Length: 140
Length: 137
Figure (spheres, each protein chain N blue to C red):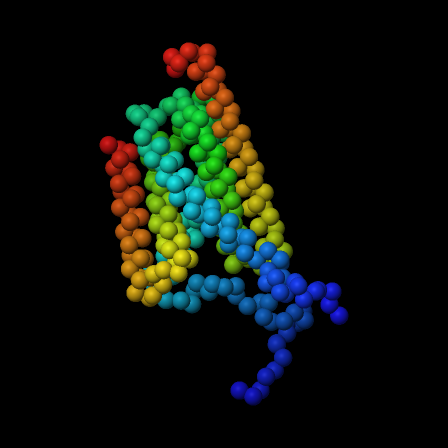
């Protein structure tokens, strides 16, 4: 193409490029194991950030005595509370397994497409097994 | 005319001047979080029977647990804030981006400090009970 025109401008005079959608363009990709695991690594990271916030809040409430604690955190042992704890533990084990996968990549290892798929399935299975084992341990 | 010296480019730190520190801290904290998370989750799973307020106070106030919990809060707070910053920078632009990243950092700082204060308070409480109770608790 020989016709190189200057960047298009909007009515406000800003380059049109500033109105482009922001990367990563999640909506234009066909879901693949690699992308889905990556998205869930971020998603579980957000869950764990929220969990750390609740955990710190929980410690503060814990230090305020049994009355305040029972008033604000009695729901923790209810079915809803256990459900939330289960999701947090699943997010923790998932983020741990895919996080270790990222650290292995950063060493320059297991970067072939085949290895990336193998480690992806391994991380997924390991997260499931660890979560199941953890709750069997707690309930035993 | 530019006021930049060639040294600026030669150091290879990029326009912000601190290109690699975010990556380094994110990765150092991720490695530290592996044993910390495993410790806390295992130690919580090992609590006996119906978990009462007293059990949890003695769990969090026990010196070794308190040290691990304080480390977890600091390392986890850093890791979480850096991670949230990356997500925000990927999806939010302009002034909102700077405001959100600032809010995340302030929020992380506040909860980590509050959590550490609570753990120290619980630790002192447990210590006092053990001293007064002569180990009976």
